[in-house]
Length: 234
Image (cartoon, rainbow, N blue to C red; front, top):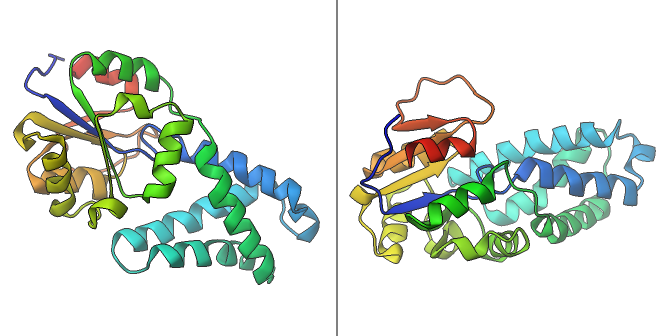
């Protein structure tokens, strides 16, 4: 595939694209299962707990991205729903799990394979930026602890911008902050709705990061299954 020369600015999603949310989350959840002796309360295993968390968390974040619920609701409902699925009703425990999860998870540093190799390659050719549907206090910790922060010229969060992907407003906000033009920019992310359709509707090229090789019918500018594939097209 021919390398594309027209881009000057690359906008990366953070969670599930560079920062390995599932791996970092599973590590924290395993620690919480051990600390709070959740197996003795009826949780089958740390792996089952992590799978339940992922299913419920995805649903809550989907509702958040659609403006159906607030940040506060995610934090309040997440562990209540998880424990309820195991017939455990303990609001105090839910609050402790929520607080400890939120404190510990952003400090984890697992990233996707080839993240640093690819960023080292790209930083010599492009201006790199973060555009994430996340919260300032959490996302900046992730960037620092994972040693990703130095690679990026600007960081835009939905929390800081006041808009969420896929709204065109947040893409415009990010472009303006980067002093870029959308014609010379490309968005890279794992979410077809927020990252890819958002960029497409804004008029920005996009690269769908699909490590699970999920089947879809979306029309995308480019698709990759590994971050190392970026070196073939950028």
